[in-house]
Image 1 (cartoon, one colour):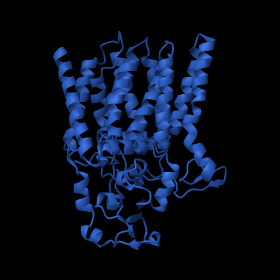
Image 2 (cartoon, rainbow, N blue to C red):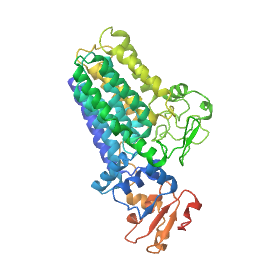
Image 3 (cartoon, rainbow, N blue to C red):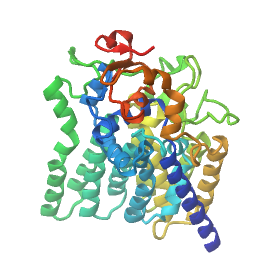
Image 4 (cartoon, rainbow, N blue to C red):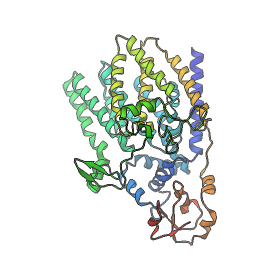
Length: 472
């Protein structure tokens, strides 16, 4: 088994190295990357000044209301590396950091976690992008695993785990708004367990008070939005008790026609099974946002690799049935509760928003297999490693290894392909020009096109170009 273990370590290390090179080389071209993640990162990192690139009305609302921790870190990484692809390192870091977390807190060998995560297609496609779904949901999964362990194991929840839960909750809540309901549920579950299980009353009070004291860190963005805009989740318009809270965006809702009237749990189950998605023969079966043309049966569906999902669920159920003692049954019950809650979340079929479910499932199976004294059946750590390596290989083969090797474009290549050089040359120095080239409008900014100073006004519609010359 030592040879198998060494081979698995080598595979995990080689994949991480190749993905790191990819992250530093390929500028993310997924829609949201160019539409707002990279423009926000450029502003927050001081790469493109506010006066050189004027955001569209919609993006001004998003910049004013969205959590921006992710874009701030991306801007810093962009500045440190000197390239916009440096912003990808935030998502890339999610995998080794989650592996470190599982090793530190659950004694899971890091290479098993790396392979277990990269077998999830949406992890593999997001790990070299500027989307914040992966880092936000990795942090949320860490919080959920701490809460699950607190309920499943009779051992005392240590201060290290309590502080880790606070840190994970803070990261998740300030990276993505959609994590807030699950952060709240996990925080309440962990707090309830501390109140119920701690033998030392004073220690129990201290831990709970520490969690309560951290709440301002978790709700600072909604409180700020409530104070400024009168809506905690601005820029999305909300209706609360018959009252309309202002916003420039309507609540996002999109699903295949055949699932339009289906309840959340049905949508979630169909998406886990990847019903209607592209076949395995298509390199586009798994992408960053699971886009398919309007009217397609699998639009925004899938992304967890249906066979991998089923294998992990079967593994957890079999272990729970076979183990009469230990944490397996309580862990399975906790995961069932998590599944029920996730299935009712907004857009439950759009799995990139709910990556925490799959990351938590993978983490649970690795922990249960690697814990001291764990039964060798249904799976040993080595068997899990081999299985996840095979699943990772399937994902790489189906996608043509597009996400684990440099296969995209650098900044210079993108500018050459997406910016009209002749139009740039015609812009008078010091003028204001309106550009409608989403999601590549940011590439027209003056810092990427020579020393000539001019202002780009980003627009989604022609009427937003009132005070600037429209570039045809």
